[in-house]
Length: 424
Image 1 (tube, one colour):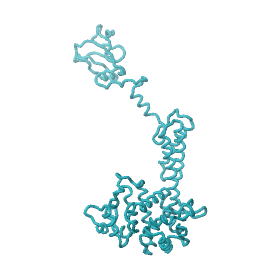
Image 2 (tube, one colour):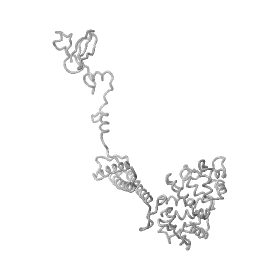
Image 3 (cartoon, rainbow, N blue to C red):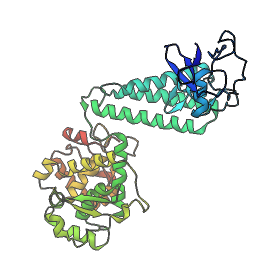
Image 4 (spheres, rainbow, N blue to C red):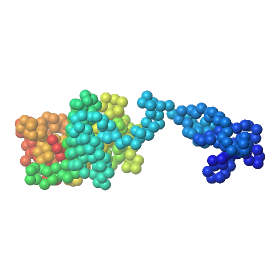
């Protein structure tokens, strides 16, 4: 690279591409051009045959580039980031971390130094397995349940090693998720009636069956009115409003539940304050509402700001409501013109049956259901339960071997009703 004066008397530098860049006006004296090596000027003594006197280069900031790039940095570039405690600039440290692949599972980083080694490897592989499952085109609940089982075991051991209680909580959640996933898979493929029995597709999981029985017990104990019609309306509306305290009903709903008593029952529930109708709306207005414009009713005791009798998610709420609707709207029950008490008995027997359809849990004294409890839920006297059980037999809801001896209701759901079993 050569330097000299152009025709205008200014200093210039010949670059690698042959172009000249003027650096100073005439009369500013000599100086070194940024960069290494000796720079010769055409106006130096001796006609440019010798080196110019050395001029000290300006001090550079730490990290500034040499040469022309250094001049540009001095003129306006951002200062280099200060080094961290380990002498590595912060920006370089971030870049180094960004390029590193950390092993993660359930949004937690698996430490590189976690011991024992077999636990670290299992957690790393488990994270990869969950991510691979998420990329599947179709779900496989059996595979997912096994992944949750592995996660429960691995996180429990991780908690033991580190003493981190949050890891044990995560392990407990994974164990519960594994159980729920298996129930969902069993429902999807059908739960066998017995060892050699055919599979039956169930509407409820075992967990949802527990929620259903909790709702039924709440209605039995806390129904504001004693009659069967009121209890049936309380049950169905409770399932609509279970999460938010409000639910939509139509005239068709009310009429299918309560036949000709719908208006009187709805008004009675509003009069005692259990149910709130929309402002300026009447029970008759609710009966006239259509599916496209349902009536939104409020149950004050189920509003989330109040102490609530049960808790479940929106999927479970919808499933329970649909299950109850299938029971009370059963085609054969409608054909037999079953009243509110008979429909309540159908709901109760379905909810309190085992997978094989037998009423009551296997561990209960003498099997069957306590007659007093059944009668209380249905708004009946205990001695009247047998009559309504007979109506369920006629409608093909219960098998014929039903009896009420010894203060217990014993029997079995008909085969066609098995999908509605509460899976005790």
